[in-house]
Amino acid sequence: MASHIGRIARLTLFSGPNCSLCDVAKAELAKVRQQRPFELETINIQDKGQERWKRKYVYWIPALHLDGKEVAKGRWDAQTVIQALDAWKQSQCGEEDTKNG
Image (cartoon, rainbow, N blue to C red; front, side, top):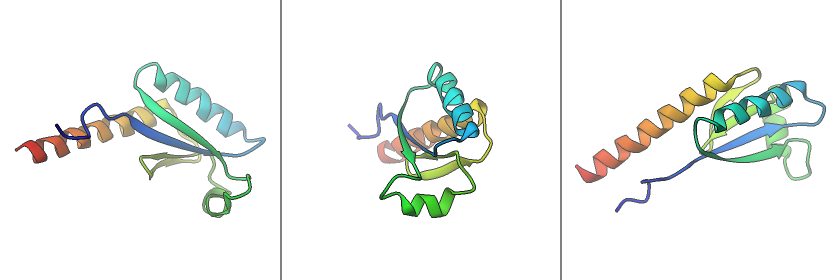
């Protein structure tokens, strides 16, 4: 059986301190979690060792990655995340069809 079956999406939230949009993003992710399963890692771009992400997102937090790919940055809402998760799930099903066909 293929390894993608039952695989859960991995979201990474890039945030920072004193970021009101980041607080909104966390609330939006809580709404999404009631409808779609996902794993969540939160990275504070100000933390030591996160210089790469700080350079990339210093003006664009909150940013969100889905399985390592950027799906949103700046101002976004639950619907944006739901659409990304649904597209991801469809792509996983497509991979299964290709492998099994």
